[in-house]
Length: 150
Image (cartoon, rainbow, N blue to C red; front, side):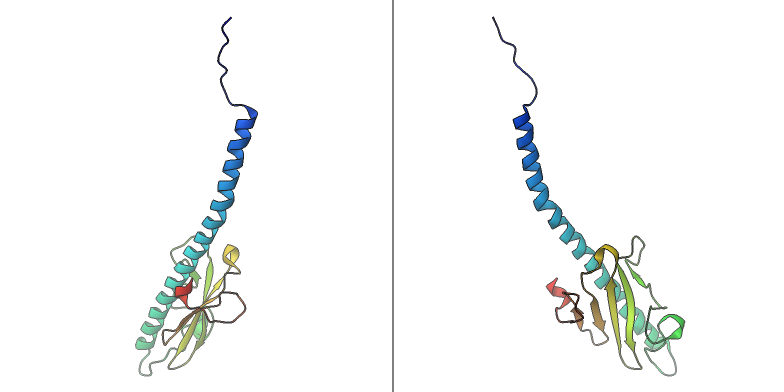
């Protein structure tokens, strides 16, 4: 008597495949999530640099007295910018960072990107008029790490 070859997978084979897929997912998903956070942070860095350029244009256009003052909403010196987007990404999509002017006077300014939503807890980014770029990596209001350390 000739036996027929059985087709299909046994339960053990399916369980082995599922275990392998679970291990791969356990490695890949956290890595992907870190990549996404870094990508959003990099976009916020670019948005802060764009806001800095807008601050420089604002400074030049204020005649006869050049000043960084009055660039926030309502002509204020601090708060959400009125001369540039107040969120990052600036081209639409879900807002990941709020852009703020945290200090502005006649000769200097400080800009900040504050994470929100899924990005919350990633730490604030700061850019000053002298070009100092810092990151509050631990989200404890201690700006020490440079952007390049991300």
